[in-house]
Image 1 (spheres, helix red, strand yellow):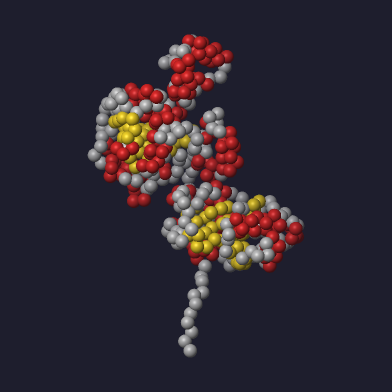
Image 2: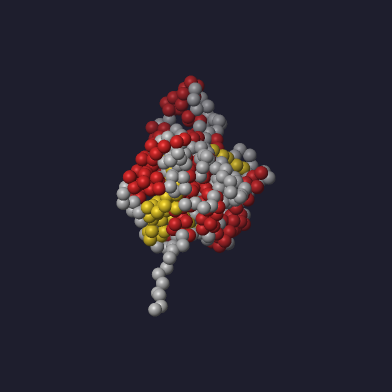
Length: 462
C-alpha cells in the first residue's frame, strides 16, 4: 500500500482506478474508527487538489487566483493550520478587506481556520485581542486592509491575505497595506505570504502579477468548475445559468484577469468600485426605463404590431436614494418577445418596484410604444422620450456619474455590465449582441433621475 507520506500530491483519496480503490480499502481496514473519521475530515493533503497545496519549489509569495467556490479560503485556512502546528515560533498575519471579514470568513467561517483545526489542536480565539493562539506557542493576529498603519511595527514569519482584489484602494490603501506587510515579514528562516483572491484589475493585482511574470511570485489558478464535486449542485447550476459566457463569469467563475477594452466608457474595475453590498437607503424616486426592440411594434419586417423581435427589450429599474445617490436595482430585460410580452414585463416591474415613472424610448415605435404599454397597464406613469443623439453620446454623461461616485449597482448584473463595457468613446459599440439594449435602458433611467432638467416654480411679480 502507498505510504500517505509519499503518496502523490492532491486528490490522493479521490484518485480513480482499481488500484486506488484497493489501497483505500486496505487503509480503511488498518485504521481505527476514530482514525478513519479523522482521515475523512482532516487529512487535507489527501483531499486537496494540487492547486490548493503549497508549491513544490521554493517560494516567498504564493498567489491563488481562482474563481468563486474554488476552495481558496479552505486552502488558506489549512495552510495556516499546518504552519501553526509545525512551528511553535510562527507569528502569522491574517489580513482581509476589513476586520469583520477576517473574523467571519478567515477565522470563524465554514472554511476558516477554526473549522480547519480538529478539536484538540484548535487555537484559542480572543476576538477582543484580535488574536489566535495555539498550544505550542504559535500566534496569529487579525488585521484590516483598510487600516494600513496597523501593520507598522509588528513582525511576522507568515501571512495569509484573503480576497486582495477586494481591498479598498481609495487613497492607495490596498497597496499601502501590502507594502507595509512586506516590511513586517522578517521573522524565521523563510518568511512566506499566501494571497488568495478572485481576480480583478486593481493596482495591487497588477503589481503582484508583474512580480509573478518576473518569477518572484508562485501562482496557482483555477475555476469554480474544478470544485464541482464539493459545491451544492443547485448553486453550481445557478451560477452557470446566470454568468456563463459573460465577462463577469470569466472573472468570477473562470478566474480570468479580464482586461479592460481601450476606450470603453465603463470598465470592470469602475463597476466593481460602484458595487453596493450594504443596505440600500430609502428611495426618493423610482424609475423603470424601457428600450423597446427595434421594429417590435412597427414595421413589416418584424411582423407588424404583433410580431416577435429577435432583439432584447431593455428594462432597467433604478432609484434615487435619499442620500442623493442613484442605485441600479434590477435588470428585467427580456429577449425574443412579442410586444405584449415585454409590455407586461414592464408593467410587472413598475408594480413590483412601485415606480413613479416609466420612461420609454419612442424613436422606433412612436405612439405605438405608448399604446402597447397602456394595453398592459392603463395606469402606467408613462413618459415617452425621443433620442436626438446616438446611444454612446447619450451614455457619456452617465458614465461620468459613475466616475464621480454618484451611481451604485445594488447587485450583480452580468449581461447589463457587459454591454456597458462595450460602449466606446467615439460612438461605437463593441459589446455582446447587436445592440446595447440593456445599457440604453440604464442610460435613460439614470438620465431621468440625475440629469433631466426640471422646471422650478417661479414667483411672478405683478
